[in-house]
Amino acid sequence: MRMRQITFLGAATLALAATLPAPAQEGAIDKRVERLEKEMRAVQRSVFPGGSPTFFEGEIAPDNTPGERARSNAPVIDLTARVDALESQLQALTGQTEQNAFQLRELEKQFTAYKTEMDKRFADPAATATPASLPPAPTVKPPTAASTVAATPAKKPAVTTAKPAATTPNAARLALVKKVEIPATGNETKDAYDYGYRLWEAKLYPEAQAQLKQVVTKWPNSSQASFAQNLLGRAYLDEGKPSLAAVAFYNNYKDRPSGARAPHSLMYMGVALDKLGRKADACKAFRELEEVYGDKAPQDVRTDAAAAKTKAGC
Picture 1: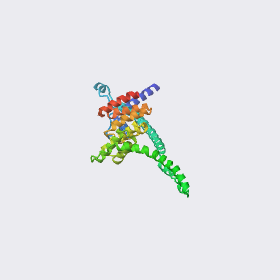
Picture 2: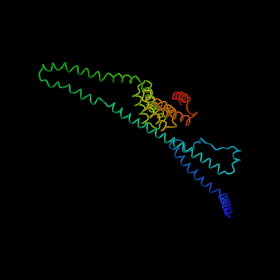
Picture 3: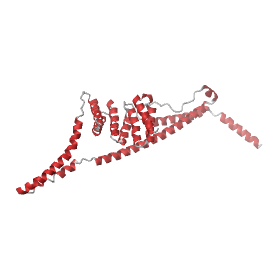
């Protein structure tokens, strides 16, 4: 008797599961899909700021083979598998976003520390030098003619030793800067960038950096801003400051992803990170260059990126 009851209950349970409405199952999956789409849009806005609002093609595509479709009796099962694949892809993309954000914070910390150190090191010594040069003028103290005659020889060497030490390096640097011709074509933005380029070409890196920063600050939305920010990073890189270079390259790629020099900045950011010993991050930059730009990147960028990628051991 008890076996009959168990058999009857099992049959009733199977019958009840078979009569469950398919729209209820599909409605639950639709809610999961809508939630995943919202989360994917949020992740894309974080990973690709300023990019296209449309979806990017997923790495896991649905199987459109007719034979496989024929063997799938329930469309809900196929949709569930696709939603599960989308969830796993979203988790991987979220983890990558968190890693990129952490690495960016580390770069910003290094840049801030470097900047404060440079500000202290390059504090203007002229303010302290001028008061120190004034005390030797107690030539007023001696009232007698004999004492003034004795004071003048001691006064002359102090003046002659101070002036050449202060003026010689500045004069030599100024002479080098004056040799660089300032363009005057009438296009103010392009002339400003071309002058910074000529300073960089003459290896006057601090002067070139100041000029290029002015171009980016004064005309941030112009077509020359992408060129100037990228060349600013190269000036830091050529001067042996890969930390500042990596920040400059990253800012150009982040603020102007469709700019003319955005692929160049992404490639040089990998070079700068490799010089800092962060080979894993450098490989990520090269990988992102291939994924974001691909064949759209200029040929010279792809060639240089392949060589730098090999050098970094990616």
